[in-house]
Amino acid sequence: MCLSIPGKLIKITEQLDDIFRVGKVSFDGIIKEVSLTLVPEAKVGDYVMVHVGAAISIVNEEEAKKTFELLKQLGELHELDDSDST
Image 1 (cartoon, rainbow, N blue to C red):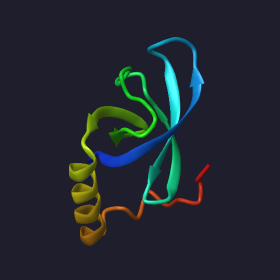
Image 2: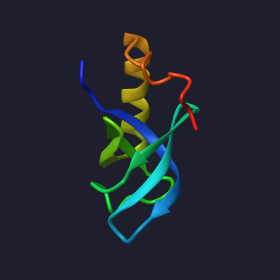
Image 3: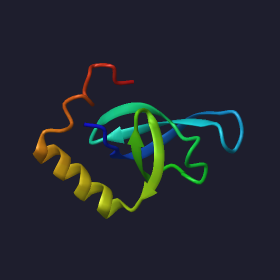
Image 4: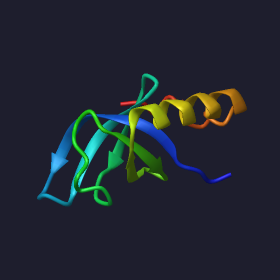
């Protein structure tokens, strides 16, 4: 199943300009590098929906936490923790 997962943007790690950026996103403690190109307005502390390594939208914290908890209950987060955490 293809879906997006909410996570918290904790750090901007690369920035070529205002649009082409990469950041570290925390998914309940699992940290992944994510492209921020599609959400140039995202800032550290924002919650973003991530699909295939790219943040595709910004969501509020409450909605992000609800979605993440539901995904945990459904067992849909097993691919996230692939020991490739950075």
